[in-house]
Image 1 (tube, rainbow, N blue to C red):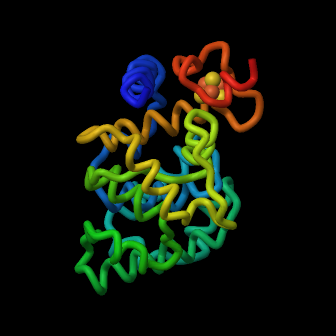
Image 2 (image 1 turned 90 degrees about the vertical axis):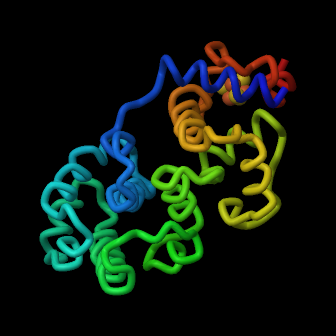
Length: 213
Ligand code: SF4
């Protein structure tokens, strides 16, 4: 069942992957910026803002010296303007404490201002290609529907058991592409409302689907 899940998701993704500029880079600074901008925001909307920030502030030191008002103006189309100050603070800490280099260490990442479990794991996975699942509302939904794996915690995103369960379904040495594949599958097929089960390549192994019929 697990092999079918992994293979079918990867084959589906080969034909359906979404293209974003932050997926075309391995630069941890750019990936960290993208993850802050993607928080609670539709990925398609983020592209223009991400490109502007990376072009105006190509290094953490540049971003650390940005005027908060200028950053807020750039981020305005996305809302959640507090991210302007957050980006600046992160960049300042990276510049001062880590000499401008994003640490390849989850414990260090999670101590940065506004960086939680999800963002730290996303950077570890997408920038440093570490073997870890990126646990968010999307992957939580897939675990629940496909495998009937649910959290009883108030904050499932921080549930260590759920994190371990997700890590187990990520194929070895394919962490980065498989996490991207899961995010795209959740955005395009296994959506929060009205999942497109008729076009789903894993419906025959899906717990939720087989219990609907
Ligand atoms: S069958 Fe439906 S609920 Fe199950 S994984 Fe596919 S889209 Fe999601």
